[in-house]
Amino acid sequence: MLRSLALVLALLFTGMIAARAEDTAQQAFEKDAQAAIKELASSLKSSLMAAMNEGGPAEAVSVCHLIAPTLAAEISKKYGLEIRRTSLKVRNPANEADAWETDVLQRFETRLASGEAIQKLTFKEKVDSESGSQWRMMKAIPTDKVCLSCHGKKIAEPVQARIDTHYPDDMATGFKLGDIRGAFTVSRDIIE
Image (cartoon, rainbow, N blue to C red; front, side, top):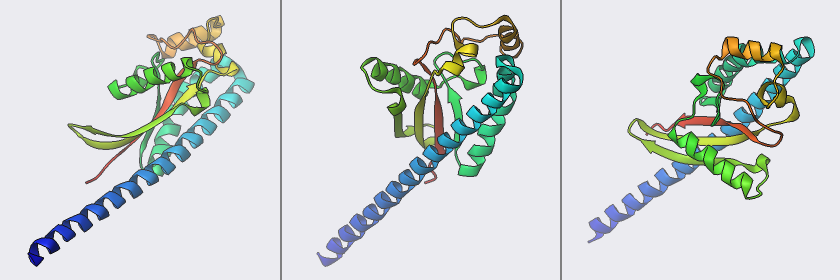
């Protein structure tokens, strides 16, 4: 009887330790994901604004094409996770949303339509799949005024020509101020 009780207590204690470790890992992921999103958003905005000041919106297209993937890779490595951008209407096919991201983006659209502020549109969860478990987080990217010169309804010919050169299958136009342009998407594998 005492042996059984000791076994039960040991199992409970082990389960409590495992749950606490998972909570700690989740909190670390959330902290790192938020920092990575903030850093990528800030770095991209700075690079885009510098390009716009130097060569206008057409030059900003080149920043998205050449600099954004490098920034994402550097920040991913820095925080030990994967960060990228996606959308329901992608410009770069490499940024196409997977099923989980598509679902979250659609939920963001519903939440925005219900009156929730776009700045509060975030979602995070643990995702289990055949390839393993991951922590995942997404944060909506609002369409600001500066975005419209490349992603709006009226795009100047030189900008459109640059978009066509880099992204012949572009779908990322027709946005208006305040739309969800896309989202930052972050993931980290859970090593068990």
